[in-house]
Image (cartoon, rainbow, N blue to C red; front, side, top):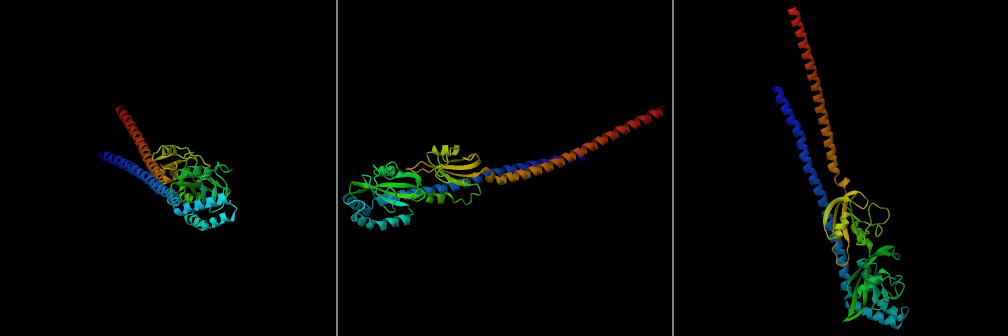
Length: 349
């Protein structure tokens, strides 16, 4: 009876030692996964707001600046001077000198690359910093297929954005915002601001709290990155194509999270969202390698495996020793029974 009680107690103990850690581990695993995804969601939403605000502020800048009467006056004076006397005339230079300090202030204070005054006929009348197409015509000249020409045409009708391209003059990727300039109801031309990629890049490289493998990146509607990967020595801006399940869902308008293979073929936790800007169709992704995000889970799994192995070894060893003891006992009992039968036979004889 005592032995039966001991075995019942032993089974109950082993059951406790196996079930309780398993239940606790499952709860812990779920909590870690939720925490990891929630952290990525928080980073994603904060970064989305930051990027959204940045581009909308630039949109607001060009919209307000193009409506400033001083800008309209500048367009009229520059247009009269350039069409009457030409770009190289002293009269034109005098008008440029009037507006140069103000435009330089906007460029340096707001962190722009450049500001352009372009009349409705496509003549680049003024730029705060001289570039190759300053003084050319964007409708008929060499740069008529350039990004600035495209945004100029759209900017004659409404505020518009043109995607980033490489600008060799400043050795950086730049993009443009354009807006129409009117005096009364007469269209004078388009005002254009040129902004650097460095502003956007600085937002995307703030990876505090994302560990060694966390990264934030943008993908344009052409499928190419609008940022630089932390895993690449070479720039990936407009060079690296990304086509994953997360990007496809984000381009379809979905906001969510998933565990998937990223553009490197590595398993990652991904939090994705469209930027929801009217003038661009980009998506934002915040990701971290699964191996790093779930490192604590794998550590616990390893410890539980070791503990289970030790317990299993002890249990098997104990059962093996008990089996040997039982085998010896049976052998001994059989031997005793055999001797008893021989003694009985001897006495009968």
